[in-house]
Image 1 (cartoon, rainbow, N blue to C red):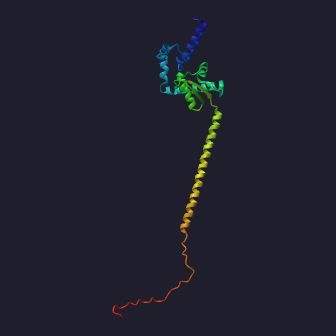
Image 2: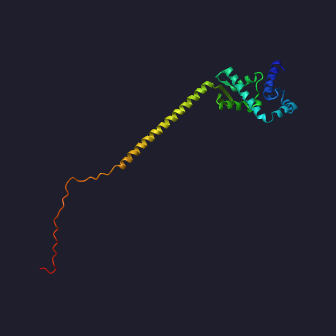
Image 3: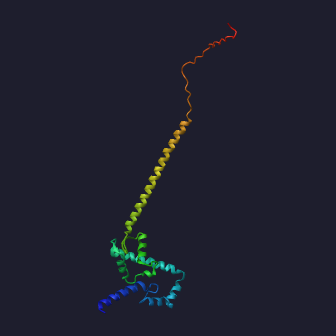
Length: 213
C-alpha cells in the first residue's frame, strides 16, 4: 500500500474515531466500535454513570449547551456572517483540540443540530438536497429587527384601538341624534282660517201620501 493511500486511510480512521468512539464523560478515545463497547461496560465508566445518578440529564444538557456555544463561537471567528457548507465547517469544528463531541449531546446528527440552530434563529439555513449551507445570524442585527417588529406591532395595535374608539364615538353620536329626535314634542298644526258653522236646517223631505191626488 502506497504511503499516500495509507495516510489517507489513517486520516479517515482518526476522523471516524473522533466522531463515533469517543467517551466525553471519561474523555477517552476508543479505537473502534468494539473498544468503545468494552469501555462503556468497564467499571470506571459505570462508576461515573452511577455517580451522576439523577444528574445524568443535567450533564447531557450541559454538554449540549457547551457544544452549541463552541460551535457558534468558532463559526463567528472563522466565517463571521458569511455562508459556509455545514458539513465542511463541522470538520473544522471537530479538528479543534478538546472539543465537545456530538455523541455526548442531545443531538443525534449534524442535520438535527443545524435545524435546531435555525429554528432558534441562530443561523440562516439553505438546503439543496442533502447539502446544507449555514450563515451566522448577527445577534445585534437580529435584536434590532426584533425591536422594530415589536414596535411596528404595537403601533398597529394602537392604530387599531384608535380606529375602534373613533367608530364607537361616531356610532354613539348617531344614537344620540336618534334619541333626541324621539324626545322632541309633537307640534299640532292648526289652520289659521276661522271655522264656519252652518246653522241652516236641512229641509225635510216631503213625503207624498199614497192617496194624495
